[in-house]
Length: 366
Image 1 (cartoon, one colour):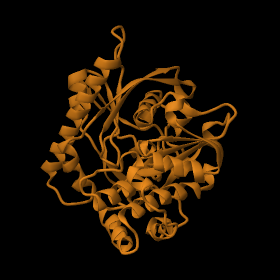
Image 2: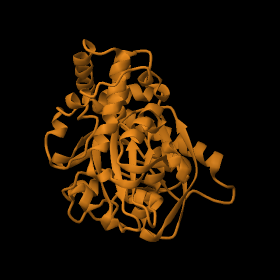
Image 3: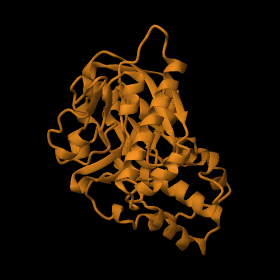
């Protein structure tokens, strides 16, 4: 799994028992790989800058090779000698997400994985929902239900990636009761501000910069002027919404009023309060996951502002925060294999999305 933050590739080994919605999933282990120079190749593509077809083909192949490296390392480190890998599920790198046009492009070449590891690969999981009129996102709520539901407590799973999104799981509830959606920018905003103000840093390690700043509560109002927050219609969000240009314009507007540390502290606070304003986050527990959950200042802001009794990291439930998405995609692939629709119409807005996923099989392509 690579996300909108372009901060690395995470691969998780998941043991799935049972079938369909009766399955259970256990994380066995994970590895994280740096994208290295590939991040510099993919970043301008995700910003819509023009490239030749050959550029995209080469990037897809490189990404496929990196996935093969990661899965190979994952198996060497965590797969027991008496077990074999049954399938690989890959998200690919989102280049452009345009649900209003019914399309979304996740760049990925599965052939290196199939050739090197001789296992089926499931990918392109968003298209069935998009063709059925949905947003194609978020698609992980059903995997959150498999991995994190509680028989009695209402839980919200808050993913703090490039975009912040939430899954609300009613205690003992069925998939039809799951709520979810994208709520706003997270690391796309925080990391973008840090890189603009502190060019030698890619992100605010442990929230150390933010801790030194003073929060200006008015910054949230500036962020909410973004067009994504002007419509009441439910929609999915991505890098194409919260561009580098938008982040830089925001920093320029704030630089005459606030110190760099104040700006970082204020945008972190804004991320937490944007999430906290959603009625979906009212629950007994909030479970934080994604790279942003390693920002101690952001986690504290959630603890201070969320309308929940308890805030914890997904680590406490056996899934490290870095593994939540990659483990979730393993579950999604297993559901696809069992011909269970993974997209929930009440979340994506689709009508009868059907079974998702494209498959490439060893020796046979379909």
